[in-house]
Length: 270
Length: 356
Image (tube, rainbow over all chains, first blue to last red; front, side, top):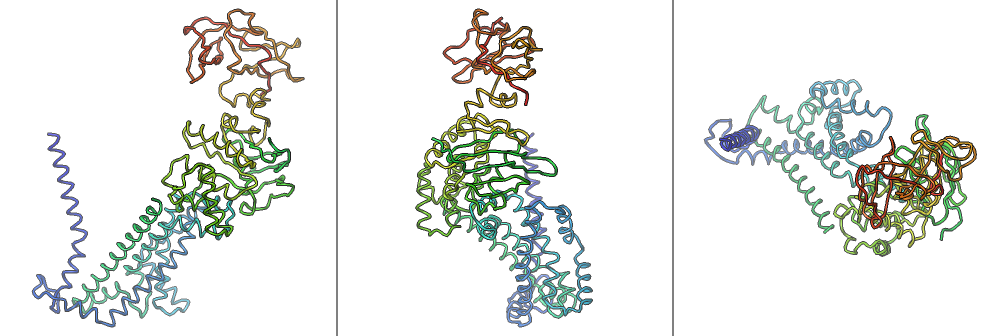
């Protein structure tokens, strides 16, 4: 009786898990299917299969431009947010200072702001001080939201950091700069690395902030939205697939890099 | 064996945290080449004191004088001293060799010379050469201890500080490493300043011990002096089990206690001490067959006995009080629980100390 109950429970868990996986991944898969048509419109079931729209999209100068804009924004956001968030995380989790608990709350607040409102507010603010909107203002907008996230990601690593490591290095004659280079940064590297991944991917996929702040420049999510509203072609799911696959590749690539680093460390040790 | 020259001199050293004196006007001379241990319970200020000596905490007032030079304001990385931390603080991303070489790398020593020195130190600390490239996360607690010590020795400090580095280890390993550390001290002839909360640990290793309480050094002396002539109830109770009984000194020089009836013969007592505590170590208390076998005797009841390896400990109840006796195993007392026994001690084997 009991074994039967266990079996049923086990079966339910399996069914539930498969259902969730399908529910989460089917839409992304459908995008890819929708891109593999040769017809002009979205017709289901697909009658004429083909890679025509993939060729068209990959040859398009406009699409190159858009991908380039998205990559540049994400890359610049990654670099700046790693630097800001690294020091922010030290203030967040390493040092005890007056006002720290206040800082911890205030720095995390922007994560919970509705992004469209934040985008609008930044747009008004850029206008007020007379800044020309471009990918650079979008970088700033992305930073407002992403730096807090990355700060939190790196802080988690900092919490497990033994401050005595820095003191020991300092005591052994290292200057503050040498302590940072020889101990603090290498020990916190896994956190910094995952913080960087977060920064890139959050910027890469961001729509609401870009919509308000890129001006004449266009990012991938903006383009997808604009084309959906007016002028759908199967080029939209092609770019959508590229965008998703790009994110997955970066994520898996990052994971592999971490794995390789760990393995090398272990190999050195053995 | 120990040089007479003073290497480190502390004068009125004080550290205040939010109005609380963690370290309170400490005066101390540490001699060249000695192994000096500061012992105290947690919260006694010993860690704060050590951190000031190492340069990680700035004194509120007083002087730290190293070989005649006042070093109060010199930061840790500019001091010729080095510390072995409680957590050991081995760099987890560096291998054993790179950890040991760290101070040499900072000093700009060439890689080949660094490696040679690291291997020398590994030899001194009996770490196998094959450990050079091993990760510090993959070696045992005792080996990590040796790596931390090797790294500190690579710095070639004038004084080595130890912040309870053995406290996280199990008993057996701790006992081994205590002796090993003393051997390393003998080999290197450097000045070691060690802090611990275990007076037992201090006894094993130290040339001299300073007992700390509430930010003050309450007694400084050799292990022998601290053990046999503690200057207060606090110090006497700090090592293991001890018999302490409140006493009043009568005009004729004998002792009376509110806890046990009778008068007791007293050892020589400091002038003016009226109310104090009689201290008798467990090994000086004896089971008597005749009342006349010792200067003082008390009838009691054998409550229990405990085997402590080479010794056996007995608890004897006398009224409300429990006396602790210890005998070597081969001279064990043959008695039954609840048996009436007579215990006693000679006046010369006891001391009378004040509370503080």
